[in-house]
Image 1 (spheres, each protein chain N blue to C red):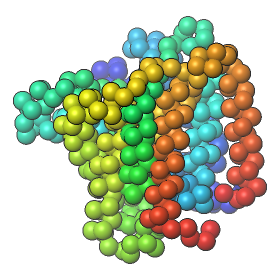
Image 2 (image 1 turned 180 degrees about the vertical axis):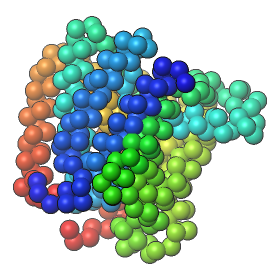
Image 3 (image 1 turned 45 degrees about the vertical axis):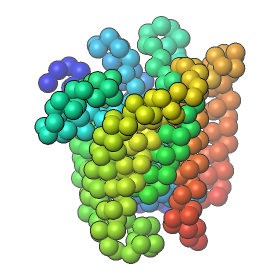
Image 4 (image 1 turned 90 degrees about the vertical axis):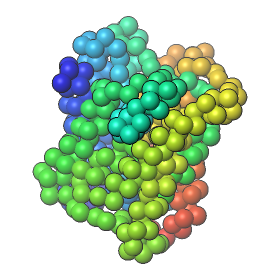
Length: 176
Length: 180
């Protein structure tokens, strides 16, 4: 295996370990968040984001790493995001957690994984059609919120931290 | 912040914060050693895996497909990351004895009964729709939800709102609101 593959594998093992320890891989945690009954996955995701955004912006600001923003293609993100939400609710796993759920014995995740492989193949077949329709509506490019607002990322990060910590307090108060 | 960890799990705040550190370390390490900053993600791997499988049946079709050409069918960093998630989860579940064979998840069973066939059909078609959406949006809750949000990408905020917005809508319709 190449260095690249080894690095991916080691990172993935640590990621999978933490996903399982955080108990976010389960169907009932994912659907529980959608039903606003159990916010474990949001606590997990938002905690990762709070910590990650500080380090990523420090490193990128110092020129040590580069950003890899995904394009704000209006049709792609709105229609694709909506489709994903619909499928996610039925399947009860997202792509990363499906593999992790299989690892902790929830073997029904295999049906979702097979469906996702089929979905990827179907998307590849229909790609030319989407390219000339949904993907062609309006592309704002690879933009970041601080740039779009014309303010320092640190202001956005401070506001995001404050709002998220408030949300955490609300989660705990309501025992979610 | 009490209960729920009695099965050996960690606080989701702690495990999540550690994933944040992992994402930072990984962005730094990939830049240093691979020359390109890589961010956590998962859904592109399903395209590559589909391509690898399809290649065994019809290599010409894969070679001629514009999307496979764009994505490049190869066993790359993220492909190994996704395999690693399986191994890491297995190791963690084994370490605290939370490994559990499950054919039908409880919330699903409450609504649709214990039929494995029903669950299989639901998950399969849910998977098709979810992956088509993730590829259209260029990301899933890892790529948009974690990596995009950490970078404050505009697309991540919109995608995550759509993921949860439609997820909540469909979940409410499909599973109903059970008393907490």
